[in-house]
Length: 319
Image (cartoon, rainbow, N blue to C red; front, side, top):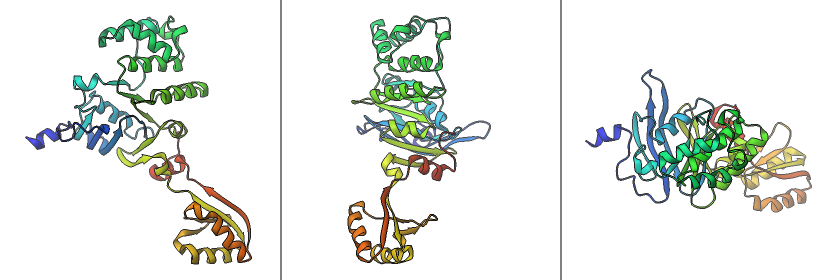
């Protein structure tokens, strides 16, 4: 029975009750009837109380993964637990608010009326609707028909619906998609606000600068496979020290002897990149100057999340 149970894609009791994580998947896989392998053995761990960014190019498998997390589709194989339960379990759904593949509401009803419909379905008071409208800053425009809203306002209504139950976990699929720069900034600030305290926010995106500003940890998916997971700083890696000194060959030889040849990289522009603890910067500068070299540049360089993303996926961020 155990193998048959695992192949349904829902977790066993061994994964339930982990108080440090709210989402955990092991070898999560989805193959559609057409033969397309959309998600391939994804291991994901989302910790409680963090804003987690699920990064990947369009078509990488982000939305399919999120749909499995909330029980909209069943995995082909692997295990997954969400809020301590199997996806789609009423106990799990009670703790989750989600906006996946864009907001869908009655166009002829107002934002407030649409949210009241959702509130009635999930057993929440209409007073809560007013509180959430204020939170997403739609109170003054809540009486307008949904069909008249801008893309940003529609996204806000979708986020509001996800928050009605005051969920432990909020899942947002491309929440800044289609927004203008001001709308993106507003949504970013809202997500940062939502992520404060004990609530967990899981957002998917292909916009790296947005994720970098919002998220504490990220997972990167490419062609259905998770290729990296960690904090933004962990993915960026340690900062490197860039040096310009003349003559450069003498500087390179001196630094290679001091730090090891593998830790000194010659750049095409004539500078040197050092893999070294930045606390040694002053000592390195002193060594070069005392050796009679002219040091004209000395700076720490940290790899951007976009550069990491391009290395991991072979694509450009934001595409």
